[in-house]
Amino acid sequence: MSLSITLIDLAGAVALLLWGTHMVQTGVQRAYGPGLRALLAGALRNRFVAFMAGLGVTALLQSSTATGLMVTGFAAGGMLALAPALAVMLGANVGTTVIVQILSFNVATVSPALILIGVLLFRRDTSARTHDLGRVFIGLGLMLLALHQLLLMMTPFEDTPSLRMFLGAIATVPIVAVLLGAAVTWAVHSSVAVVLFAMSLAASGALPPNAAFALVLGANLGTAVNPILEGPANGDPAARRVPVGNFLIRLVGVSICLATLDPIGRAMVHIDPDPARAIADFHTLFNVVLASLFFGVLSPYARLLEWLLPTRTPSADPSRPRYLDPATKETPVVALGAAAREALRLADVLEGMLRGARDAMAKNDRRLISETKRQDDVLDRLNTAIKTFLTSIDPEELGENDQRRLEQILGFAMKLEQAGDVIDRNLLPHAMKGLKRGLNFSLEDRAELLAMMDRLIINLRAAASLFMTDDSRAARLLAEEKVSFREAESVATAAHIDRLRTASLATAQASALHLDLLRDLKLANSYIVAAAAYPVLEQTGELLQSRITRLN
Image 1 (cartoon, rainbow, N blue to C red):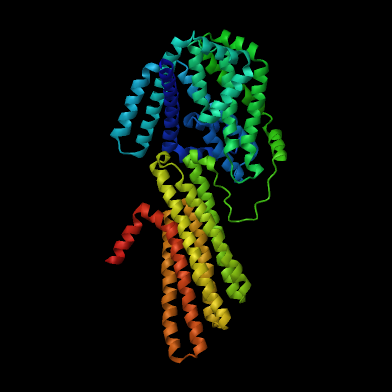
Image 2: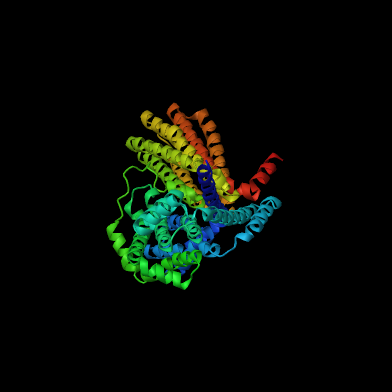
């Protein structure tokens, strides 16, 4: 019974350590995620700056996986070369050691103070960022509390025969400790937690230093396995260059350290007799030395990876998502960026539909109409994939700004899909009806239709740009386009009524079809405007003001 209770206590302390680590990561991501992503994107032109950016961002996020996902997205999108991306990962590997260094000192006494500060920040202020910083302080306090509990629990069991036998087996065969550390790190998704746990075991005397060093090597290897196994989802080998490159670097380092573990272990213990401090120093030195060895050869190493993992020709199926990687959902700012990139593909597909419809009407081509209608299926599938991806993100992981961006992406995707439905179900059938009946527009009407379609394509491009920039001036200009389409419909309606009095039946039918097509274009334009302009104007309050003005 006592053994069961002890195992439950031990599992609870480990769970508390993992939850504290999770709170620190999510708190920083919510408070500073978009800013850190922008900082990382802007620092990738210089290799040394990229290394320092990776170190700094990861030290704050306490997740090299999150940093890796951002960098992988930049590299896959062609925003940076592979060598700077690998430099970021070298910096990220060093960045994960910062919190370990801090917690390796006897700072358990500040745990209650950190939790108290965190609770006060979380409850006292209404701003989202202050709440998120409160989460960070609470998480740090829980981590310290969990480490202290682990140390207290392990001390009475130092002389337990079964535990000594198990840990002795690990100490005798270091490769077992490496594999165990890698497996546990992969399972819990936190190398920091595993390294801190190894420090607790070593500090209590339950684990020999060399076995603890081997566990740390396994943790460093395991954290590089996660990005390879869990993404990317598009199947392109080129998208795996960054995570595979980082894994191979760590594999080389682990192999060298494993072969020379005895002399390294003696040297580390001689430098710092405190087992916890020795493990923290070993963890840091491993990553610093590895970064130093590979930093100068990143360019040839990048060329080797490009040769081993060539870019694959994109899939012939345009409805297949390219950027919705399930692994990114653990880091909301990265997941939202991927969803936004996928949503921009909707704009590209919709522009293809508009161009197909325009060419079909300009050339009186029935085949083009049929081909264009099939593109609506691509819109539907991409929209469904985006909605499924976004709604599967844990709402608890989202800050206020993240939630607003998620809703903006969902609205943008749905409105563009509705605009596609207008083209598929209204515009193209009307165009086909005109061809089947042999109706001929006047030169003026045909020119007006083509001009309005060109204008709609321009508006769609403006909406796609606005979706990424949130520029209020561009939003006002796009919203004003509704007036132009409304006026064109009014003029066409008046002209159609005049024609009914004197025109022949064929001319009247062509005039009615011209009016229907203009109404279809006006409706599609309204969805495009609502997709991008209205969310920006709602944030600034201009949309509500304009509605009040119209009511008055």
